[in-house]
Length: 317
Image (cartoon, rainbow, N blue to C red; front, side, top):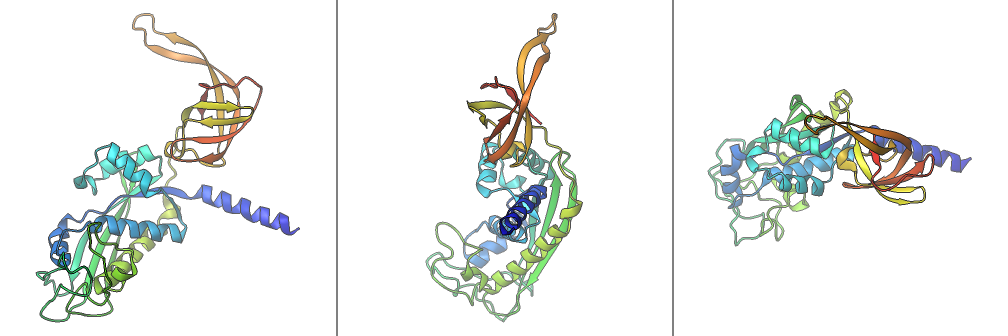
């Protein structure tokens, strides 16, 4: 009986995971506050990437979405020559999201990052200092304030499906936005780690964490109303070992564990006699493949149907 309960729980968990909307989170645009960022830290830091990483952590832990791995997103962005200036552009983000096979893509901007008295003309963390607890000295104690906006974009149309804001204010005041945390490292050659406990202990870290948490909560509230993207899956059989098939399509093409895909054998092509253009292909239905494993570029599963499936046969949903 206990085994049946465990199996039922695992099956329910798998179905729940498959029902989640798939999203990707772009690096946030911080052009509006870049000057202040350089003043605070003593050098320009990509806080847009840091806040995106924090947002991914919140969404994954909250469990309302299935979030694409950053490695897959970064690789595709590099391949598409996506520039920093495109970060907040819905149409550019939609193109990336469509290639990733997600239901929606999240873009955002940082509209405030500094002191509550708006006096951001303070020194930052010197390159030689190597710790949060020095630099950024102001003339009086102030709280830190961070405000961000996140937008959820339909990857098919570029339409903004939802827009939410998060505004965080530190509970403490200080003469330094990056004081109170300390610790070695922080802003080195690799840049600031905004997910670290060192950053979280600073007053600007407190404000950032609160802003991201608020924004993630707003996005989670929109999860149920997010339309499911209709994904057209079209690939080929790459390997056949008995009833075990490996396909040349994976999660970036919309394939998910638990999917059942149709296998067809491609026959003759019918061409336009005037232009030579292929008008249609005659295909013969063979059977189906139940997907048991999938990564970004490939998947595998068990074939059901008459014998004869071979490498090059077409896979469709």
